[in-house]
Image: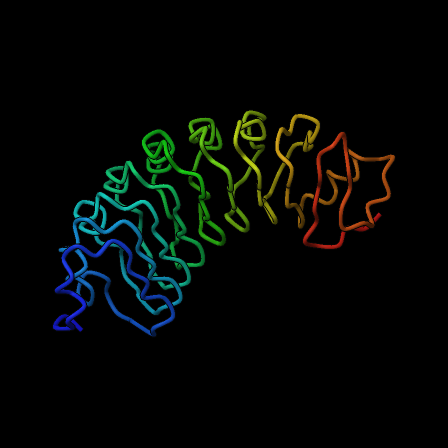
Length: 229
């Protein structure tokens, strides 16, 4: 793998190795990637990588704008060096084996430093140690935020629903303890479900929640899961 002529392309900017049944440690099996200092887009999704994510991935590939590590077996904490990726526009870490993806400061630092992020996908990774107030620091450039099955607890700050460029918020199965005040939303699509159902019944007593789409003051609420009355 390391001797592949692909790795002689020193000016490579986009590399898609998704769905190639690559496995083992990211550092051991793809260390040649770290020589692509000008790489802007890297997709390693749908492989069988495991172990901790190497700090070198972030410290060597600082030009990345798009990074997809989803659907692997990574575990351990995300290194703080991810904050070096100041040009990152899209980040997908979903569907890995992280027992706890961020430490107490990790997500807060990411939210503060990755100011160009437009797409952030963290589905089915454990974020139970993340303080929901950290979401207040998310980039105002954010357009798509996906937090399905992240083991977050509490109530998302209202300001998250008011990010100026946000178009899609996916929070299926979020354990939300407060009522969702969708009247504060300034974006067109909210994807809800799971434990939100009881609170939706409280918030929308006058609606028959049997439709897949509800229009509310020119905003659209889309359900991926069927909601009962």
